[in-house]
Image (cartoon, rainbow, N blue to C red; front, side):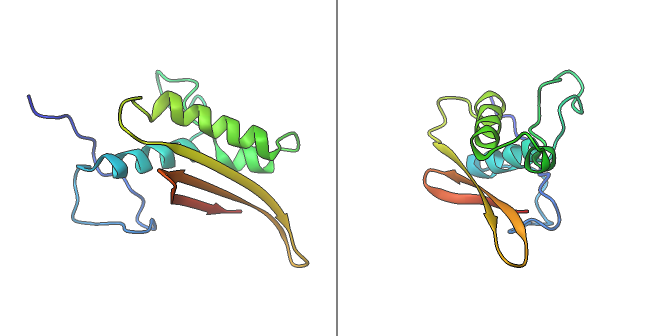
Length: 122
């Protein structure tokens, strides 16, 4: 029986975007796309999955969020919606707020098997 594959839904601005791909045929690409969807989806936006989504914007700019809470929220979403458990991937989420003379911000980095695959700067 053939393996079921997802549509290639990477954003046009994403690194390594490939306009000629129609489906995802690589397990790591599939995981990265799923994590990306979790990061920028608000809860209740996905019909039938009211708890899907971490909404990074709300987490980062919430007055009650801290680095540990953001990391735990993203990590639990990844475990629940992205990892099959037997796929051989180890995912680590790192969150760090920073302050400079010019601005305040936050780094969110997602590592898969000790390799950074997603980096977000706010």
